[in-house]
Image 1 (tube, rainbow, N blue to C red):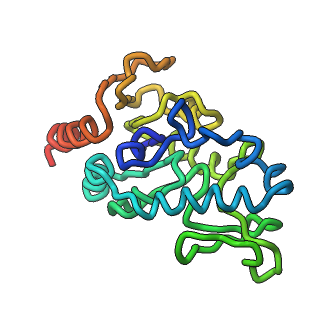
Image 2 (cartoon, helix red, strand yellow; image 1 turned 90 degrees about the horizontal axis):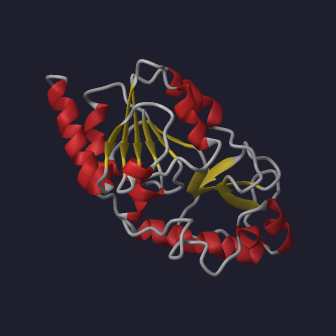
Length: 227
């Protein structure tokens, strides 16, 4: 199981949600990423995500995304990502589970089960689902449940090797997946700050960027498996 966070997408030029240069710069979370914000100012929320969607469409998968594709043909591999972009899919990975939704999809503002692909980069007022409700971004906002945490937990429970890429393991409930990895399974962290990431289990730490560390790790893993 490959568990990815903002660090892998940042190397494709996508801003992260945290830090001084992060995507939230200039916007309070409460104003763009909560159900209350949607009720107060739909136009601001829609434009915030329209801008993010345009950035995703302009970005390209990097060496880390591409290296992970090789695992599909050699191992029983799942990618579980905190990212809402589609760079894993565009690189060619076949099995990707998005914990926090997908920026290139929309959902009914009244029925989250009604999900649709977005043609282009924009959602606008007046774009409705077949039930008549306004379409909103298909992302998990702060304060909302994470519907895919159950399936992700099930994958973690049977992971022989749990690989963490580009995340500090500080965002919950996503970070709790580590707690479900079997005691005899291997865990690897790949991140420039890997040596400083707290982990309750013995782990292998690769203190490199995703685009540098992931291709090396994949090559080593395939070689050690004799494939």
